[in-house]
Amino acid sequence: MAETELVLTPQQAEPQGAGQASGPQAVPPEFSALYDHVVTCSKCGFCQPVCPIFRATGREAHVARGKLALFRNLVEGRSPLVPELKEAYANCLLCRACTEACFSAVKTDKVVVTFRHQYGERFGRGFLQRQVFRRLLPRPRLMRSIVRSLWALRRTGLPDLARRLGLIRLLNPKLERAMELSRGVPGPLLTSRLATRPLPIVSAPLPRVGYWVSCGYNYALPEVGEATVSVLETLGYQVEILDNCCCGLAAYGYGDLEAASHLAQENLRRLEDLDRLEAVVTECGSCSGHLKEYGALLKEDPLWRDRAAALSEKTRSFSEFVMERGGLGALLTFAEESGPPGEETPAPTVVTYHEPCHLGRRYQNIVEQPRAILRSLPGIAFREAAEADSCCGLAGTYGVLHPQTSAAIAQRKMSFFKTTGARVIATECPACMMQLAWGAQQSEAELDVVNVSQLCAQALKSRVSK
Ligand code: SF4
Ligand code: SF4
Image 1: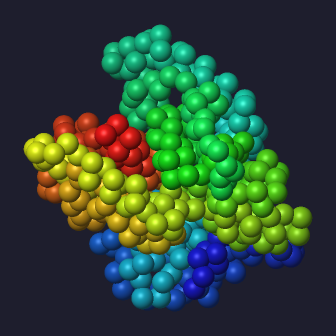
Image 2: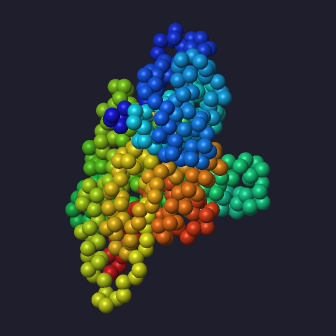
Image 3: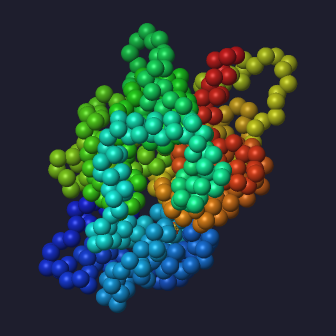
């Protein structure tokens, strides 16, 4: 089954045939459309041991089988769409581990997004959610101003003092969790840093790639984006910093398909004709995964579908792009050969890897590339961890809205990372980086969390300094 078929479009989700859905108990057509697929669930339970949430809570409503049974009840008219059902569908990371383990390959993530969309249509969406997805995220300049103000407030130390005194928890425990995830105040945003970076001096025109600015790196981890751009430039590309807004994955995950489509259209408008670029590169697995779905998301929109498909086609995750272009081998060989003679080789740093859901085997299938890069870097001993491809438990805002379950998932991951003896966890997604850093800190593990691109930049820098 093609990946793109897993993405819902607003047209698919739109109620068709108003007569069918006019009564309070009428089954929404978007539910009925999934019925034949949902009934292929044989109730075998193979999805239980792989579901990170079920492993943490043990609740049947939290695993694919339970959600599918509830969904079937809805379509068969045995249960109405009521607010009590929301909890079961809110408890999903959209990680697709269940689909991978399922003989029928039931697309539970699609069922969950469909439910969330229809739930929002029926009961409305929260004011804050609507403002963020529909008014704020399509306006990156406004978004940057707000984030700068928030960081300025944080720099006063007052919010962290309030957190240490327990006042934030009293106010809202979810806010406390959000503050814990973004511990350091990053200084200038990535977009500001990249705008003032010294440009490489070149004697001839270089192939041009677009660097997609992910929200996570821009607002919270700007040093990662700087590293990525420096690697792309060292590899011999002219890097154009794209003027994109949020990719829209969060809106899609919430089931706000209209906002997700609007964000996709806004990005296509901002990026203009893509012919000038060899590729659009990002070190955020969630962004690259979602950009590759734009073609499917807008396939029924005659105005945008061709450009959406073109962007999907051009999109590359960082490690995918680096390996496609031959890896870092040629550049790094020089570093290994040019070490001072007789110098004692330092013990290699043991590095392990966390595979982000949207990057890895269940979405983009970028599995070997980051591992191959890590194995190729000098001074690094790569060790695979158990369940490296299992979700870290953050999944957008899931970790903030369900702090206990998310913490249990992170702790399980940490226990596996610790047994590798690694000092560093490499990954390729800002949300995963924040969650794993939080997990390491909570479990008092001496583990640094970095992006694969940062390790590449470090290795290339040592080549230049030799
Ligand atoms: S593994 Fe698939 S078929 Fe088996 S219970 Fe889970 S969703 Fe149903
Ligand atoms: S997508 Fe992930 S979190 Fe959701 S039910 Fe499947 S395994 Fe569980």
